[in-house]
Amino acid sequence: MKMDEPAANTVRLIFQLALQGMSNTKIAKELYDRKIVIPEVYKGRKRRQEMPDLHSPYVWTLSTIQRILSDEQYIGTYVMRKTVVKELGTKSVNQNEKDWIKIPNHHEAIITKEIFEQVQKQLPHIKIKSRKQKEYLLKGKVYCGYCNHNMDRRPKKNAVFICRYSEVDAAFSCHNLSIEEKELEEIVFQMILKQIEIIKNAEQISNIDVQTAQKIELQKQVKLYQQKKKIFYEQYIEGNLTEEQFMRINLELTKELEPIQSKLEKIDFQLQYNQKRNLFQNQIEKIEKDNFHSLSKKLVDIFIDKIYIFKENRIEVKWKIEDFLQKR
Ligand SMILES: [Zn+2]
Image 1 (tube, helix red, strand yellow):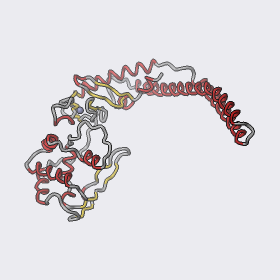
Image 2 (image 1 turned 180 degrees about the vertical axis):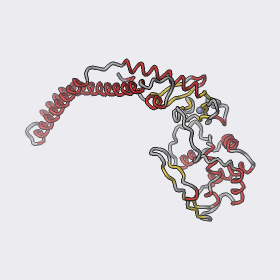
Image 3 (image 1 turned 90 degrees about the vertical axis):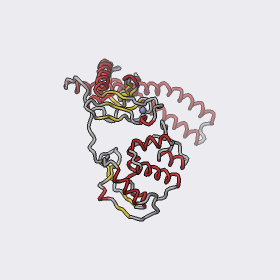
Image 4 (image 1 turned 120 degrees about the horizontal axis):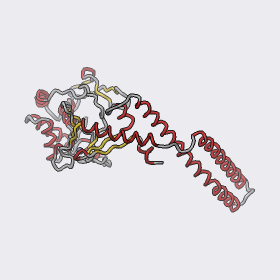
């Protein structure tokens, strides 16, 4: 592992702060106050990469600090973590530490073994990865409306969603932003009921069978024109038509083709609209049989893409069905 001096200094600083007995939260605050950029940003700048739009490059997550403080690579050990992807589309998860390959004294150490071991004794022994994640209705859906980070759910008896990202600085617009889970679920449920009404009342544009037949007919016409164009082009290549003649014929055919193509696009669009409408109406019919009275995982899955939280319980929902409702 090669590490440049500034990066190594940051690692040393983090260990120093930990040795002083600071908690990970306090270390995060200290790094923020000292304006030390997070690893992703540091690496990005070194490679002169455009960075994604970050709210602040100085906000360290607790898991990053925890990861650095328990990383044996800093004492010169080569660690090959075996990772495994547990669910498709999710991040790979570290395997049990006993399955890792470790080679001590593999490279120059940044941190002495003594300091490292001292810090290990102090570290809170939270196994972030092995801890079973609690299931809850709006999991992965709740975002801070100001900084766009996923909001944490504090699993108290009356759970609240909070934006942890802005904890380090009261100057952030989302500092202390929170919303009660129960309240949020009720608001979202009411919003979904309204969406259901809209979809139920969405009328079918014309008849799908008629439209499909029209589509096939139009497609045939388009193909015919394309064949004609090809024939005239070949005539021109073979010298049977002058360039001027060919261009004139080609332009005429293009003009004739235009209205056919726009008609085809329109029908295609209406067909898609109808198919989507039918799909959603079927889904709604199915869930209505369950006689729902409150928010359920099913409803969330069908309707909700993301929920953005703002102050005073103002929320904005990004619907999965948005384009269906808008483009009609
Ligand atoms: Zn925020």
